[in-house]
Image 1: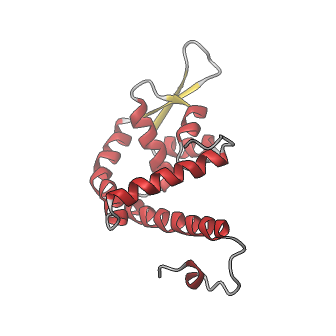
Image 2 (image 1 turned 180 degrees about the vertical axis):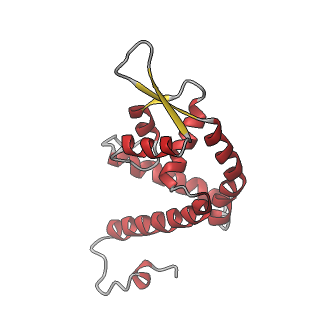
Length: 161
């Protein structure tokens, strides 16, 4: 279905075009998230765990403190500490205290975590193309531009023209 009103069996009209756009965005986000989750399910990871592993791979051998991982997450995660503990039990990450500031705990991806990501990479890289490949490049560029404007409003930033 392409019409949200029909898809969710909405009887009355939306209260505004902004409401309809927001609900379309939320519904589409959920749909895409579920599709990506299906792709990584076979490896026993959640999308959030996968996101953390990718962040740590990108951080390199020094690793990152908890707050920095949280800042880089695609979707906010309220309990990063528990998430990292699960990944540590799976031996996909390791943690140690910073030499200069013992209050800071750095998390690094392990070789097992890197191997897991390498095995997942071909399937995960095809995901966006399979899910959004029917859209023209110009449409994708416009969608990116519009989504960035929406995030600016969420952050209270003035609109950039």
